[in-house]
Length: 114
Length: 111
Image (cartoon, rainbow over all chains, first blue to last red; front, side, top):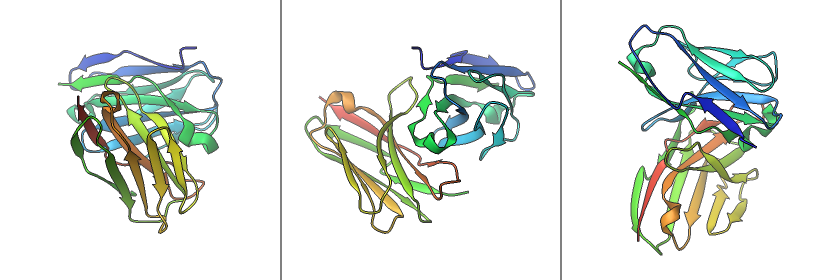
């Protein structure tokens, strides 16, 4: 069992470039989440998907889009990267939205936007 | 949005010492959680609290859900080097709302 996997581990982008962060879970979880982590800010929710076929905005959705491709995969897209999006991005999953606290996190993607 | 204030921001302690950290919110929460994040990894849930006054232990870790429902505390007894990491509190105001995370406490344990 790999749990939650994220690709890539590291990425450097120039301002204006686009990219997609990939996330997959093999625990048959219904709910998936994308967070960003910045120094002194804790984890902030970008988007989440309570179940396959649904997505909802979190606390900081601007500049991002998501796709719940199937039950396993939840991708995060930056259409036009900005330096303010330099961060560590974590994907997580839980059995359901009601079990959010027992979510399992991936290892993170470190993104630098120049 | 909801703010969680976590303190201290960082701690440098000697192996064997006890550690205390806390988290306060500006509104009432119905769930308090404590996570640990090790370098290069995602956070892992340590303890979950669901009732005011609840005291729960996980090995050398003990967490409490404050009586006012606006705070929570985490204690680590007899620290060891592998306790190093960032400890996050998180909470939820109502059953329909999403979790809010604190800023984290960076713990360093000197052997």
